[in-house]
Amino acid sequence: MKDLKILFCSILMVLVVCVSACSQKKGDSIVTCQGVPLVGLNKEAVNATIKSPEKQNCMYFEFTDKQRQTMLAKVSTKQRLALQAVISVSAGNGKVTLGIMSKGQGENEYVSISEVVSPSLEFDHVDNVTLSLCFDPQKPVPSGMYISSTMPCTVSSVSFIDAVIGADSLNNIWAAGPSGGEMNSGVIDFTDGMKIFDTQMGPNSVLPKITIALYPPASYGTMEEPFSTVFHYGPDSFKLYASPSQQTFTLQTASMTEPFAVLSEDGKPNIHAAFMSANPADEYAPNEDGIVTKGLTCDLGFVFDWPMNKWRNKDYELYVWEEFPEVLIFDFKNYKVQNEFFTRLAYFVEKNGYKGTLVSDDFVREKHGYNAHDYKGDDIARFFNLVNEKNFRINAREKMLRQILLDNGIILNNGDGTYSGGKGAVISIARESGSDLRHTLMAHESWHGIYFTDSDFRDYVSELYDAFDKTSMEFLRTYFSVYPSLQYDITDDYLMHNEFMAYHLQQSVSATGPYFKTRASWNTIASNNPAACNYVVRNEAKDFVETSRALSQYVFDHWGFKAGSTVLVERQ
Image (cartoon, rainbow, N blue to C red; front, side):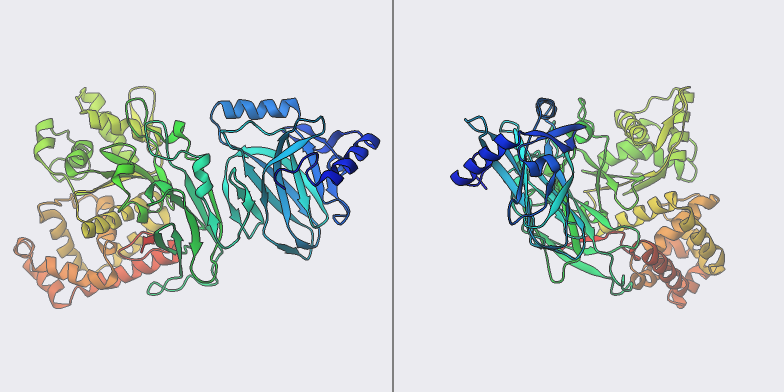
């Protein structure tokens, strides 16, 4: 319908419409937008209904001055905008179109700007079709809109919404970029997104995200063979595992080779919806001091090789774990930066002989706390309370950490100079760790994140802990307290339960036996408890293998994870 004037069809239609307009003046439509009736330019638009599409298959609407002012106000503040129409379609088959138009030169003359066309649809009952079309920010706001259908239909609603591009074939939702076009339920083209969304990561810009939804699978499979689907985004390919607790997944385009590309899927469709939308810069861009305080939501599988040149801060990137949104994840460029954030806190919370104390700056510079970290809000609040109580001078990174945790509700400001624990936890890894170690550390720390935030999981871990073989537990307590880089306080029951769980789940079930058998053979450990270490070596660490398998089955049944992995998306 491009470049069609005076209600768009042909010179003949122009005459017919002009005659129609004389006999029936344009008037308020029964359908509104922003609480104001649209102006109907033909009787179908006034009634918001196409009864006989073989006679007239189009409704033409004009926006009121108030509606245009609303559009102009939003666009002037750089708000990305789209027009959305919900259309109730009668039984039958065919296509539905939503278009926007501008005023032509004549009084009743309009020119089509762009349009979105649904795929061929077939209904055996009345159903809704939702179409939306993004406005091009480089062009004037439209003067009107039109809806056409090859099936009888009624317009249920019209509204201005935040810009979105994508499709949901399950719910008949089709959203196009400014260029419009005919939608395809099998392949979704997001290249038009570069016309309306930020195209780079910068001080005042953040690349958009894509939300993907899966059909619920008939079966989630087994730990050994879980249900999965393979999808492609431009040159990148991923395996996506279904989860009983999560039906939608966020694809951050900043992690992609090509931020604006085509999404497709191998084999039988398992993805029923995918929509691109903005990560608003006022929320996600660095603040005036260059500090990033809000995490980008994603699966942990995207974190490992996220391009550092697309980090929002040169020293770290910040994420929110999609399946556990109360868990905040730091990825640091190296151990030095990570130590400045967390080493003093690590010694305060966990290190035997230092718990409850504040070590000096020289100590922080000289000591390496851990390769990765995990903390719950209560412990962090106690740390900052002691800092205030002692009037202790913390470093700039720790002040930054405090602000980030406050902004995310992990700790709360009580307003009297004290803090309390909020919801959630924080974990961290660093790029200085090699690829394999990063995966192991992420698994270990993310299990802690779940433990901090899920009481049922803690209860199940306690059952296994209490039933664990006593001699194997003696070895574990020796390992935790003696090994130089650990030195856990084994009198802390919460810490012991938490680490007991994480060390059983940080590697695969098959790797758990060799992992503990090897450590039981180390002289550093064996010399401190030879009987317990010999016991673990002789029985091939079978108690650890059995516990790992039980925990792995639990996390698979609840979240689709397994021992050694807390990711649901793997880059291929």
